[in-house]
Image 1 (cartoon, rainbow, N blue to C red):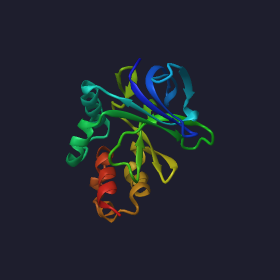
Image 2: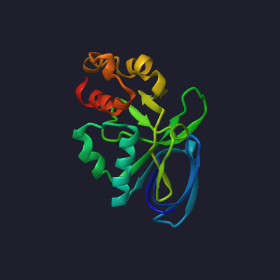
Image 3: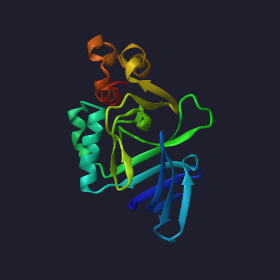
Length: 202
């Protein structure tokens, strides 16, 4: 696996180069090796050593990512369509796994472009299918769980609890979303809810 990549470590070091190998577990990207474009050195990083990873996609990859994204985070707001298709990169962030004190995973950010309040991350172990681009896992399939980060804290959001519990936990400060009928608080509308919360709620 190769591709233009940019890594930021926890101490602020930035390395740009090509991803050589990557190891995925059931909950995300656990480790990878990158060849530094300047020095030629190959370094292996574990998820807990990395703050973020950005990988460039080709034209096919951009379209495939958008198609897969809408299959799990359905009915994405029309206003965000151009941003999603024009996106050049896949983003991975290291997040603390909910309920695990010292467990960290590099997980794919699903809502770049409307993630200033709530960051939604892929939960690879809870979907029926996925697609690969250049060896990197891209979100897809019938997702039943996501990991979300709000103000640095992480939570598990589940399909079975979304309407009853998780919706209120995520959007309690957004009057526009709180005024929705219960029938409009569907799991399949989560991307739209996150988008509205990011763009139309204080």
